[in-house]
Image 1 (cartoon, one colour):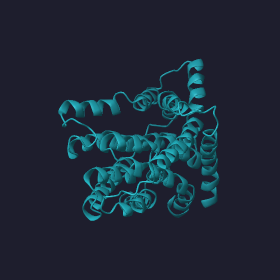
Image 2 (cartoon, one colour):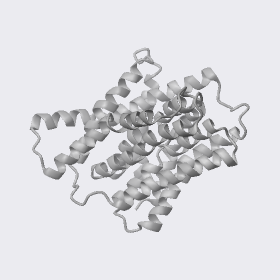
Image 3 (cartoon, one colour):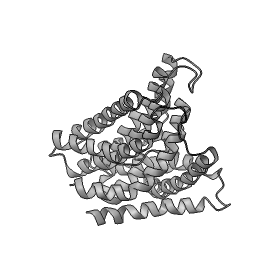
Length: 332
């Protein structure tokens, strides 16, 4: 299993390495990365998720144990991280919030879906889509709302929380999210067996084929920009922040080890007979390195994103080894 997963994962990380190398070329200036992100997020990734859901066997639905354990592990672990950083490590509220996000929110879309399809095969596409949706809804909706409620006005956002702002946050993350609509459309096609014209289906297939390499290439580009940003500003040491030196190892070990182990424990305790495809998908989703989006969210909502940027680089590099090891130990 270790070698199978390693060989399945390595090509994905090689594509990221190609993106990292390309970032040194003048043909790929910093302005290219946002354009690629827009293409992947709004076009290629929705096409991929529509395709895998539309062609999936959804007659048995989504196991409730998968949804409950994936959501429960993520939420419970996020709460544990908040308590640890705020009251045990004694960080400030903004830094504790950023640390909670960094340790809990994995790169479930750009890396998680390609990894699961590469390791488990195309039949895992529907499970991968549902897994990333659970994690993204929790963090991309929950974290901005929580930051508005728990952080004082002026920390990173100058206004006090209001019902209108919270509703706008939820609407932005759900209603305006193309991934959500792609999965809903794919589900409608699969459930009602709606006919799709051949040329349209082939067009979607072409766009979907660009999702995995496009997303991984973009991650590689972003890693170099992240490293550059850290060098320009200096590696964050958290001067004046109690316990900040302990945060980085906690964030890295928490994201790559503790959250996957918690997910495994809940699966074995509550759903040991869960279908291997869903069982394995839940573990792999929990084991993804810190999401690149976490830096943007931490910076925007707490004003303290640099430790998150460093954690993204470290967890991404270490996951090349950690993912095969976890797979060897726990995948069915």
